[in-house]
Length: 455
Image 1 (cartoon, rainbow, N blue to C red):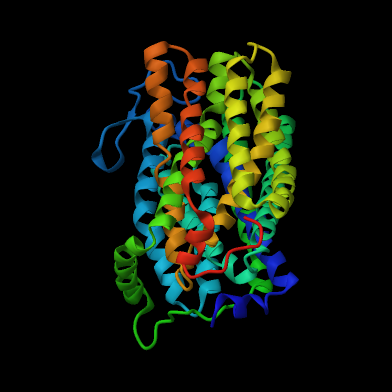
Image 2 (cartoon, rainbow, N blue to C red):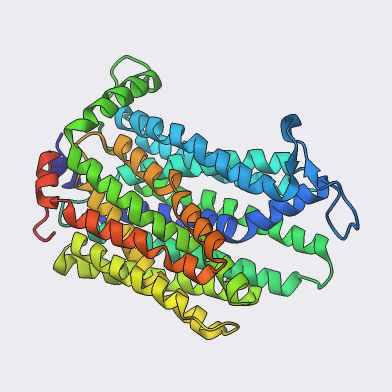
């Protein structure tokens, strides 16, 4: 079955179901990763070290599996371990998805496992930091695995001229869902927090994390109901799909050399996306340390970014329909450059300019990510969507240390967060040049696909 044949039976109901998985999983990214988990798990580790809840003196270390770790370093180390593990898991998950006749079940398995692990934070009380670390590993790896399967549906939901719009709508709905749950949780923080009661603050954070797991699992039921199975082009017949997936992954890695232009696009994406991820990761630190802004301002800015990203994804998706996805991504990289240059000139202790810059980030954030996803879908050989999106996700998540490393080195040399943030211009500039050098139409044809009319 060809891609054209499979997309001809795709319905609006199925596409809407696909959009709703973005709505479902974005709660994990915003409520858990962006806001609550880091401070919560660090506080639990500090309690285990005897430092928490107003203790005057403490040892300051915990010993997971007998290894001495500073309590404040436990969460970053767990994040690093999860990234390392996803580098191995995601391509395998993609290979299995490509050879399975039950891709929707794979998506359900990964999503519900991640949601259940997130709900498991209800039991992370007292000094159970190790339980929290294990649950996060399960949830984060499951999240990445589900995204690989989810992305692999995109080429089967629409033809070359439809995917930019489909991808943009999904990403937009995801930002809106993430915004709504985070807003509800922040209302709960304002209503139920008691000044000086650290334990209550910790409990609110814990239940906010659990709420993201409930949201993730509950709304995953929509795509499970409305999406359908698509026949696998390279289905496994009579063998073990996991074993066959490992074998196929090895063949794909060797065969990727036959698609150098697809790999070159991945390189361009790796570079400019690293700049994007670094801005997202370090914006709060820049706001608090360099600009002296209060936590409430940072939280409001996160909400503004989520909301404007909803509109930005839709607007840039519509623009891509007129001028093409690649030109729109290139334009977004110019806008990203303007954003980080503007950050250099932000006045200290002035919330409104920082929130305004957050709004600008949101507008370019949603579009640049959604259109990169749909552009890559044009460069994947038919039947290998899962495997290639596995490598795409590694480029998205597994190399996100490059930008922070550059930022950290510049800060160490200059002692200035402003210079460090402007140094990220290099990622957008180099990524722009690399993307310009990709002959997209030729690359799409080389992958065996039909180019869209506007590129």
